[in-house]
Length: 141
Image (cartoon, rainbow, N blue to C red; front, side, top):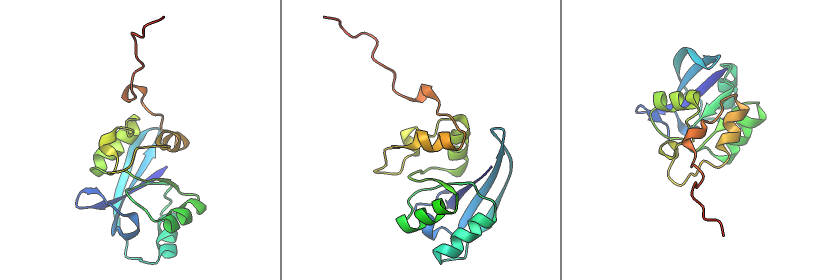
């Protein structure tokens, strides 16, 4: 599986549509086996989508993305995990460890709704330790 992360100043780029660099990471059996960066000079969304697809990318973990570009990527079979921020290595590590659902990885205004299902569709199980624990001492009347 290949995951693309748009990068800007050593952070996940705030807007995928205008990102000029992509970090492409190949994952096998839950571990990184290779990585490389590419420069995206395509501004046309369909050309940009075609270029990402041509690199064999299966999923994009990104910040914000327009509805038009999002739908185009999804229609091409590329899974999309939007609303994520942070340093690319931290985000990738959290994804592989099942800890991407931590609020510190959410863009402002994002809540992570649907993130568990998106990660599960990619084969990354959420780490249940990061979720709120149920109340233990409920009074019984």
